[in-house]
Length: 218
Image (cartoon, rainbow, N blue to C red):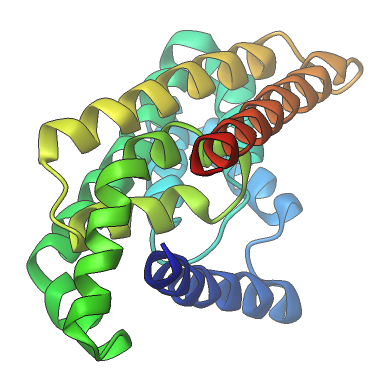
């Protein structure tokens, strides 16, 4: 498990560094994203959906405010079209993260963890806990992308990864886009409540999972 934690922390640090760079440079702020979506809506809803999907896909490479973008997708496009746009980006990001690391992950893992025995330990540990990690990954920013990369890197079966990613992502997107669709500038409370509810449920689930795991270890 220690090898898996080390591998995860390295990957998470890489993603976190992009978040810090974005914050320090002032690129991709929520106001900027909202401004792009307002301009795009004046042209065509298709442009709004494309920007949403591209931003959520880009989350694989640079940290973006995922929940905010999904809520804005529902606000600008409505529940149905907002869901389609958001799911397109999030599902594509997950599959791409898995695929890239499935093909190049062995070399990356060998570079990050020199000891072959420790690499096998990391793979075995993720094989046991990876499905649950992906399921609960939306509780913490950066964790979804990190677990997608780990799934490919450790050769998790694709159907297993896709099932976990779908169960984790689809309800998350459905709730967030619905909240956005019934919110307005004068009444943003549905979006705020949804953000709090989703985060709280995921955090509690993550806490209970770790508590249960620790009991089993003891």
